[in-house]
Amino acid sequence: MYKVCKFGGSSVATPENFKQVKKVVTSDKSRHVVVVSALGKADKSDNKITDLLYLIYQHRKYHVDATPLLKEVENRYLKIQDELGLQCHLEEEFDRLAERIEANSISEEELVSRGEYFSAKLMAGYLGFDFVDSKDLIRFDYDSKVNDAETNARIEKASLEHDYMVVPGFYGSYPNGSICLFSRGGSDVTGSYLAKGCHANLYENFTDVSGFYMCNPAFVPNPRRISYVSYNELRELSSMGANVIHQETVLPLADENIPILILNTFAPEEGGTYIERNTVNKTHHLITGITGKKNYSALVFMKKRNADKLTVLLQVLNLFAKYHVAVEHVPTSIDSFTVVFEKAKLEERYYDLVSELNRIEDIESIGEVNDIALVAVVGENMVKKPGTSGRILSVFGQEGINIVLIDQDVEEYSIIVGVSNKDFEHSIRTLYDHFAHEKVKD
Image (cartoon, rainbow, N blue to C red; front, side):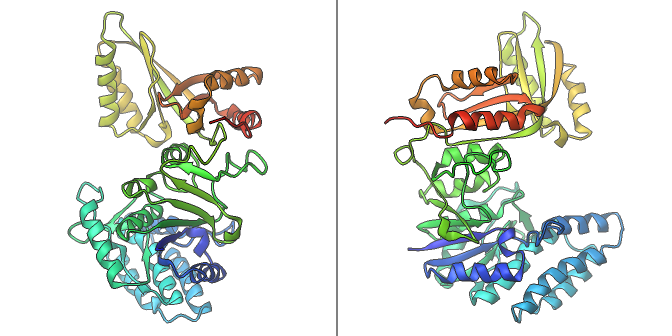
C-alpha cells in the first residue's frame, strides 16, 4: 500500500496541530508522501497566511510599507519552529525574502507560494522526511496548464529517490523555472498529481471535517454524512459550493482510478467520505448532496422573431468568452435564452460587456435579474427514480419558494434550481427535510 496524504491550512495552523499531523502520519507507514497547505487561521481573529501574502504584494505594488505584515507572517512560522525545537533556519530565509520584497524582485505568484513552501520546510523537519519542492515536480506550460507527461515523469523519479517526502502544495513552475499557482485551494490538486505520479493506491485528504455532509451544517444541524461519492458527483458538489475539496482534484486521478478518502485530521477515527469513479452499488440514497451558492445574476435575451437562435446564442457566448466571464447555466426557450453568471467578479468589465451585447442586431431586448441563488441537488441514483425534479418543484411550491430557473443535465445526476437569495437557506433545509433519508431500490 502506498498513500499520498494532504493536510489543509487548518491542520497545520499551530504547533499543536503539527503534533496531531505527525501522530496521524506516523501511525501508518504506508503514508509516503505528505502535501501541506500554508498555515490557516490559528483562531477566529487570525488571518490565513495566503491572504497576508497577497496583501503584502499589494502593499509593495502601491509603495506602502509591508514590513509589519511580513513580520506577522514570519512570527507565525517561527513560533512553530521554536515550539517544536526545529532547526530549519527560517530566519535566514525570511531575511532574504524581505530583501526581495523591498527590491520588488519577486513575482506575486512566488511570494504567495511561500506560505506552502515554509509550511513544508517545517513539516519535513518535524517528520524527518525529505523536503522536495513542488516547483521541481509540477510543471506548467506557458498557458498555465499542467504538462501531464513531464509532471508525471518528475514525480515518478522523485518517488524512487525519496522513500518519504514532504511537498508544498498550490504551486509548480513554468519551463523557465518561475512559479505558477493553481487556483485557490489548489493544494488538493497538487496532492492528486502526486498520487498519480507515485502510482498511489489511495489519496487521503485531511481537513477539519469528517468528510462530506449531505448539506452545510450551518443550515441543517447534524446533517447526514455521505459515505461514498463518485468523481462526477464530487465535481458537481465542489463546483457549486461544497468546499471540502477542490473540484479539479479528481482529474489527475481518474486516469488510474485512484480513490480519495476525506478524513478529519483531529478525529480520523470517525471515518470519512470515500470518493471513486463509480459508487452506484455502494449507496442507495436517492440524493447524495445538496449545496449551492448565492449572488448570481442573469441576463435574459429576447431575439428578434426572424433571427436564428443558435447564431444569436453563439454571438452572446463569444462575448462572454471575450470578457473572460464564467457562464454557469444557459436555459433556453423558443425565442429567448438566459445566461447565468457571477456579476460581482466582473467589476468594470460588466458595463463593457453589456455595451457590446446591446450592439448585436438580432437581439430584441435584454433583461437583467439579480440576487439569484443556485441550489444544486446531486445524486447519480436519481436516474433510478423518475419524477424527482417534479417532486422538487412541488415541494418548493408547497413552501412558497418561487423558482427563477431550473436546469437539469440529461444524465439526471444534477438538478440546478434558481431561487431568490432570501430563499437560499430555506430551500436547502426544505430539500433536506424531504429527501435526506429517501432510498432507491436496485
